[in-house]
Structure formats: structure tokens, C-alpha cells
Image (cartoon, rainbow, N blue to C red; front, side, top):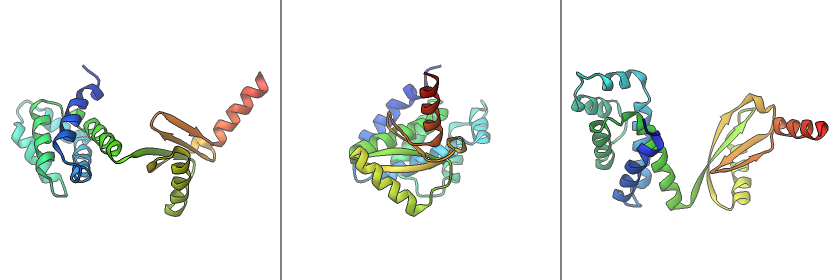
Length: 177
């Protein structure tokens, strides 16, 4: 089977072209909500049942979705269900979000930390990283106790690692060389 990224790309591109810049953020939120619903194993089992009709799967999604679902999100959902590409929906959402961010000049940043980072600390870290990368960043924090201390930041294909773990690895290499 083809990679999910390869399957998802045409869907994300088509949605991006169909949605105007003013509606892009709202549609991204709706698609992310659909992707989180699609991640449910019970729903995937229901959708994968040969006796289940596409309309039943669509109605289940729209019933579970908490917020307003616009026409663009509904149309994408219909097409994804009809083509049997429901497992690709989370990847479609991720690629669509990347396209929206690129249009607005924002990059996603994953901040890995050994300890929780609260709102004020995250704002300080984000401001520093925005200066470093010269772009507006949308930062998300993920806990990784193996870092021991410090942070590891992934922005696109760039990695900034100031963790204790990385420094210990550097010292190990220097001492064994």
C-alpha cells in the first residue's frame, strides 16, 4: 500500500485550493477534529465493515463532531469515505495544516522537554525561538523524560538540541575520541 503521505497529498492540496484564505484556519480546525475522530479504532472498525454504508459512516462522523462542520469539511469527508481513505484523514489534516501555515508564514515547532512548560515559560521560549528561526512559530510541547533537562526543538527539518542528554552524548564522544 502506498504511503499515507502520498495518499493524503492530493486531498490536502485540493482542499487548500478550494478554500479561501479567510476560511483556511476554520477549515483546518474542522479537519483536525475529523482526524481525531478518525483515529478512534472502534470507528475504523465500523467503517471497515463491508456491511456498513458510506452514508452511515458519514452520519456517524457528523454526529460525533462537536462543532460546526462547513461545506468544505463535509465534502472532503464524503470523498475520503467514498474512496476508502479514512485511515489517511489524520495525514490529510497534517498536510493541510502545513499548507495553511506556509501561506501565513507560520511554522510548527515541537518543543520536547523533560519537564512541563507552563504558559509564561512557553511564551518566553517561543519568543526566543522566533528570533532564532526568524519566523512566527506555533509551538507545541511534548514531554520526554529521557532528555534529563533542557529542551529539544524541531522546526521543519531543523533540530535545536540543548538538552542535558545531548550534552552528555557530546562529552562521551569527546572523551572517547
